[in-house]
Length: 220
Image (cartoon, rainbow, N blue to C red; front, side, top):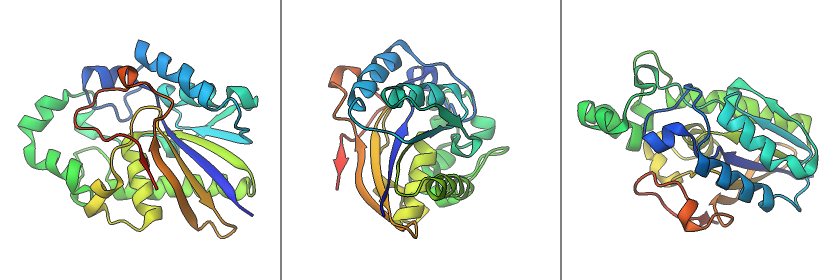
């Protein structure tokens, strides 16, 4: 009996546009974000979702509502799917952080095992709460198709956990873009098989969020 998980990153929000750290900062979706959501909804029109969950932050909840709209299921908010808490970096300009705290910024990008900002979370802590939340959703919906909307750092931490990748090598996971869809199948013992990562086939290039040196669709 296979349980399928569609793991989605939220649509573009203010923090993405302004290039500010938006962990637990509850920033609003942008105009482009809503364009992304219309195309995400179209992508899921022929996919029946049995249960839908999302981070309790608005940008994730609204994304979940669009993705699950054709299935007629409500979206259950869950704090465990929130973005990494960036602590003192919350709502800070990304370029300012990069130039002022180059060592910490390097850890954020490439050595997630060493990263923690004052008053914030570590990637390891995020991986634990994400897996706890996902596993609970899977156990309660075995043999079904579920959808979870979360955030970039949280999804990457979770993928490291289930793919057996050390957080010291988080770059192996690649980017997770706005409204990208990753598909993961689970057996009865919750062993994971990654079907695809960061699928953005529904987005034309002109409305993909520009976050720097991103990677395009990665599929196994």
